[in-house]
Image 1 (spheres, protein in one colour):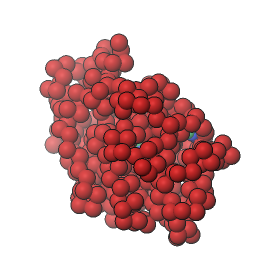
Image 2 (cartoon, helix red, strand yellow; image 1 turned 120 degrees about the vertical axis):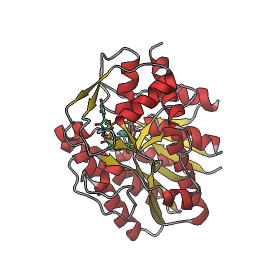
Image 3 (cartoon, helix red, strand yellow; image 1 turned 60 degrees about the vertical axis):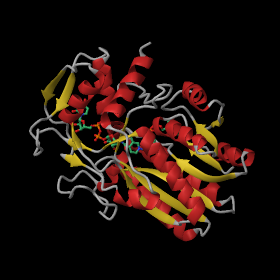
Length: 340
Ligand code: NAD
Ligand code: WQD
């Protein structure tokens, strides 16, 4: 079976993608330096797939160490690059840490994949953040929308990465790249053996919701209800992490089958939900009342971000089908498993 390298394998999306790749019959090898995850995640993956996946603890900024992975696994035919730092606020405080890590891991991966000589297939984790923070974007957002001004180093690393990959595909005829721009990944594997393990205090809405429901937080602050939306709260496209993981399998399969050299896909549901709608859906799905209050707007938030996912639906034959109540229930089950 073809082997796929997963960088950032112990991370939130990487771990869920490994499960779906194994389910689809691929061999995988994961790498991670556990800078934002734990080796326990590998135990969770093993419980789900019934075997220990091949894994090497390595910092992908260390090219020599990273190269040893390719020597040990010469049958790597594709790579999915998740390894990066991803906290917008942290990136504003530590720009060089973000540029160094997120760009050098990518450059090392590209060099090592191209050096294999055979066709090198790379799927890159990008983000809706590349569209910028303008409130004038037409919704839903199509892939053809040009990148917007990045207001954070994190967002800039994603934009730069896409530019770098474009130049590298032009320079190397054995390199194929598929870019997946994720909107708002949420939820956890239904087994509750893996999920989102934010180190430190999470800032994303769903982990804050589940921690509030679990009594680990006093109250959830809804950052603004005076936006120009039906209920005044911001709208986002919340994509179930397992559906997102399956999009990566589809992207790898298409590269192996069609040898497609370059493509970009928005990975979202195509349907937006407001913060208040998500809170209502959580309470309905779990039966747990959420203690929340309306708080001032959070600087940098845009009023709406929603994917036009038609291209992924039609070309990848992929769609996000999981009902939001099931997604939120998976997040709640995961939170409860953490508190055991
Ligand atoms: P995560 O932090 O859970 O996973 C990233 C993993 O990469 C972590 O396990 C971390 O230890 C590892 N890592 C970081 N730097 C490394 C290095 N130098 N060498 C080896 N391993 C390294 O994040 P995630 O939510 O799973 O995101 C995965 C990718 O998807 C990231 O590139 C992120 O920018 C992107 N993304 C995430 C979201 C989101 O909301 N979660 C949205 C859009 C895009
Ligand atoms: C969602 C909505 C908040 C917390 C971020 C990154 C983005 C990507 C996904 C990496 C917003 C509101 C939140 C809270 C709230 N990550 N909210 N109270 O900001 O859309 O996207 O994660 O690529 O780059 O920017 O996600 O979950 O932080 O916020 O009201 O305690 O929930 O205002 O409207 P966001 P989020």
